[in-house]
Image (cartoon, rainbow, N blue to C red; front, side, top):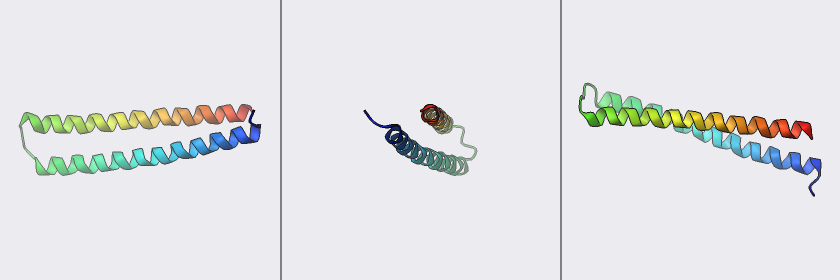
Length: 86
């Protein structure tokens, strides 16, 4: 069985990995925002259904990434709460 120190170290390592994942999520959200702005500029005034679909899809992707970020934050908090009780 692992010692408390070993458990804390393993949880800390996992939290670091989640933090790195969160940074990637944030970077992806920024890129999606840039893409959405570029798309809006390129298709300004375009009333075709595909234009609306593209905008809606990018917005949905951003929302899902935000939800993912929130879920990972909850995971970090739960892991840190656990190690605090050890």
